[in-house]
Amino acid sequence: MFLRKRFYLIGLVIVMVMTAGRAWLPLLWLGQVLLAVLLVELCTEAVVLWFSGRIDGSRTCADRFSNGDDNEVCLRVFSHYWLRVWLTVVDEAPVEFQRRDIALTVWLKPGTGRALTYRLRPVRRGSYRFGRMRVFASVLLRCMERRFTLGEEQDIKVYPSYLMLRRYELLAFSQRLTEIGIKRIRRPGNNTEFEQIKDYVKGDDYRAINWKATARTSRLMVNVYNEERSQQVFCVIDKGRLMQQTSEGMTYLDWAINAALVLSFVSIHREDKAGLITFGGKMGTLLPADRNAGQMQAILESLYRQQTVFDESDYAALVTTIGQRVQRRSLLVLFTNFSTVGATRRQLPYLRQLARRHRVLVVFFRDEELESFVQRKPTTEEDYFQQVTAEQAVANRQLIASMLRQYGMETLLVRPHELSVDVLNKYLAMRH
Image (tube, rainbow, N blue to C red; front, side):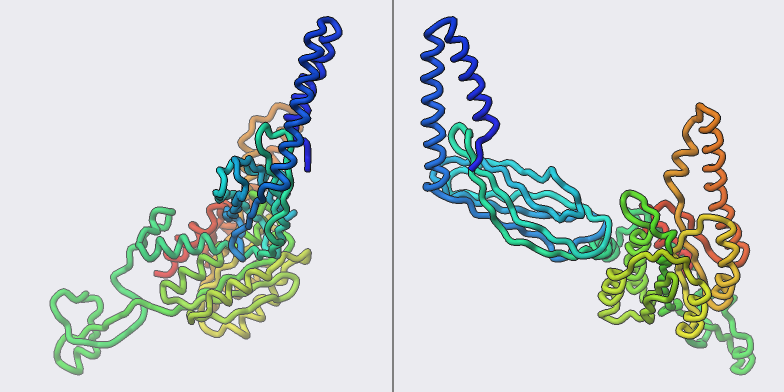
């Protein structure tokens, strides 16, 4: 049982009235009457709150939260009191959110309930634990409140952004991917996978005429090509220390994981085979490319367990492992974070080895804080020096992208929040 702020305010007014009664006696009598009324009110509220009913409540939320997305939590409360009651519902959210403002207020008529919702946005994967619900009930003048401890403690796991995945899935099935920036790619007239030789008919592309078959059969024959399918698409995720840099509260690794999950889904939806490779100071996960029914769940579980390391990433081990385990020419989408030209030059020989056998797309991040700093107007000599340094760092990333393109690698320098859409657009462009 707790006294509310309203009780102390009323008590202060009564004290002021009784103090003024020293100058005018009727005010003293009035203050005494008000004090008696206040004490009777307190006793009445205590009896009503303790003996005339109760509050029931529960928490409902998903067993898994989606990293980087707003996840809904629903609190349900029901009143068994015979008069109107005011409630303040406080939920003990996991400490990782550092939320101290989850206090929802509502009033309920006798024998009614209400569902209250709020949202939580996690910025890292892992296991989180909810506490219990604390419900504070008050009646009549609301000078006193009773606390109810409701619900149960609950563990939830934060997975890579499967809510984003569902959004892409719905848009893909409804052919509305362009609404979120996915471009339509015009398919070329000639596809890359040979299917058969057939007789020429009017309207066939004359460039597909097979002259050898025509000479043998004495009639025009053309090659028929089918759209190339089932290429292997590997998301290669760097877990080195440079991927610990954050944007909007999430590490670059988590941004890369969310994009890799979406890319894997879309590639399987396009009848390609999706796989996963992670590496840091040593090799991590290597999930062979496939498009069977359980592949997306396997990718999701593998991505859930990934964590950044403090070591420098071992590209030599990456090249060796891919050379041994990935025999078929594949599309390798490398999520990494090159910050300096010198660091890129050290890894360039290994990337060139990958590019000889596979198609390589190198995805790394634009530093939005540096770019915004460059846009500021300097006012002191120190500001000028810092701005020049920042401009050089921004220019270095553009230079890195140009350097990689010179050696036959596709590059994508992207802002973290635009990563998923830009990677998908690049994948669709490279696929054809």
